[in-house]
Length: 440
Image 1 (spheres, rainbow, N blue to C red):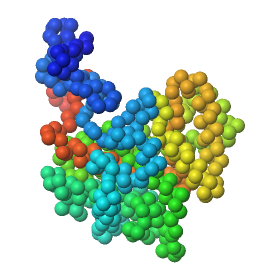
Image 2 (tube, one colour):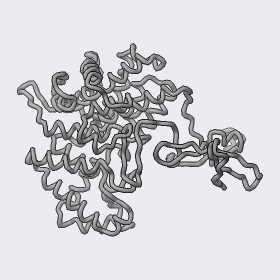
Image 3 (tube, rainbow, N blue to C red):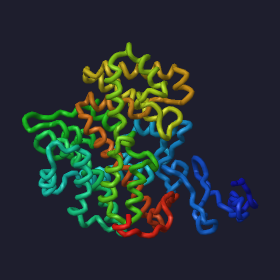
Image 4 (cartoon, one colour):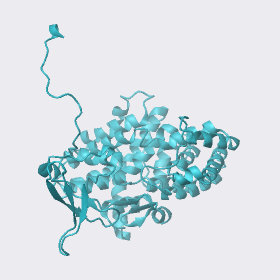
């Protein structure tokens, strides 16, 4: 059993863990958090009590200290370095948010100019990478290409691999953020059989990405400010999300002192999983399955039926037990984009809004706190803008690179480096004697 214990005023609070079998006891320090739950320090539990903690999925385990992102899932709060995601999405832009995540503070005008110049300096990729793309099949999934190409950057940029050199770490960080849109757009162009489009540093980060994606040599591309702003918001909303699966993967890979390009490639591979980065595509598939507003009540009933495999995609979240603060921002962006384009996706958006209204008036969804999340609207926006569903997770990776880089830098700058080494509860055979083949 664990019992809260408070020692004298000048000492840290502890909990006492008592083994009812051996009557051994251990005092475990309670480490305070600036926001959110405090944590119990169990680092000496195995040494002193010969026990591991058991936490599949690490849902109750803090694996690190971090000052980057705070989430309160019960209240629907998401903060980056103390700034609310709603305010950042409405008043900032993606590169400023990237600077904030990495450096810890919003940039001054001079700092922002220097940061933008660094990003622009590294937007191109080594020309030999074109040969690397040619090694993939044309029908390769863009995420497969992303994993390979980003990992291969370590074979091209030897001057930014030493994680003990802060200047090299910074250079690698800038290269990753600046080159990721170029690499992503090239993956799309390759699968389409179209020529690669080189970056244009006169454009903003989002404008440049849209141009590299959708322009062709036969005609001039004119950026649409409504679409550029909507994409920039999507990038902001996906920039970082605390210790999720892909971020934890980046940190775990980095704990072995792997180079930064390999770590980010590992994060991309983790993000590729449909349980992590593919939810907005699943929302589109669900809306297409529902088909019409008249069918919503039927599908709502199916979602509540435990014996029916149908689920409402885009509702609820592993972390948020209340409204996802990012969803409302994208709801507004969806209105703006579809109004601007007069899109054929307008009926799909109207279906989504009606589904949201009906679900949120249903006691079942209210009781279980199944509110729309960020994926509910992002797929509609991206589809209306012309992105194929195979690129949805790629865009997620472009945005999340800012968070991965920030988390990686925070980890390597910790005073003590420990390689990640989760434990297990072994449930297999004990020692067995080998039996020769002829006696089996």
